[in-house]
Image 1 (cartoon, rainbow, N blue to C red):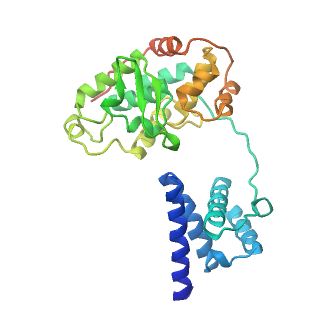
Image 2: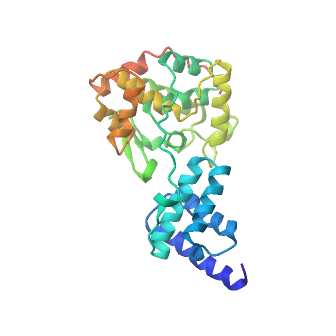
Image 3: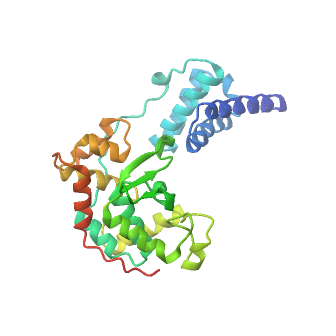
Length: 301
């Protein structure tokens, strides 16, 4: 692009970012939707407002060959937003690209395998992290960003702040998890973080950041390998395990939906395909499930 075209591109790009910000999109959404505009502009070395429908078709045909359908879908959504909110044009996405609808059920661990993973974990911080993520159905980031003030031991609830979609929710805090969190916190006594960064207690006490996300994922993968578990499992899978095990334990789907913060009941209904279905008192069952875990919190501090 010549200087004039580059200037016009930067003007359009900034309008795109501003529109995303005005709509309160998450930082991750702003990042990938903006990347879609950058990528297609670089592909053609032209301003995106000059592209024809045939250009778009050619671009997505090439993208399908080199990237995952997940990336294709994100780029499609990002460009649709750009067309709608910046160019004020209709986006004929059906004619251009429509990723196939795949229905993939996630792998989950049995309760016995969950128990095995926790007990085979040699570091207390990872033992506590795994138990916390599983026993409350939390996402990786939600666990890492738990603060001391988020724990309500009087109501036996945890305040999950700014979860997916920047929404708060309260989840049931099992007694076993409260004990584990208190025990681990007593080893570092950070004034704010429950999972501070640092290789020893002294460094964790004065940490300015939480545990590293990538470090947790790498450690979790190593733990699974040591347990000889070959399923496709990540820290996020602990959330799926929680949902499936609650269904198996007869907790009502509406109660599970509330605990997990699902906006759509269909998301919660996924777990009925991973285990048997029944209904009961969620608070009592959650505590019973966690109390039955034969867990020994004796990892190295």
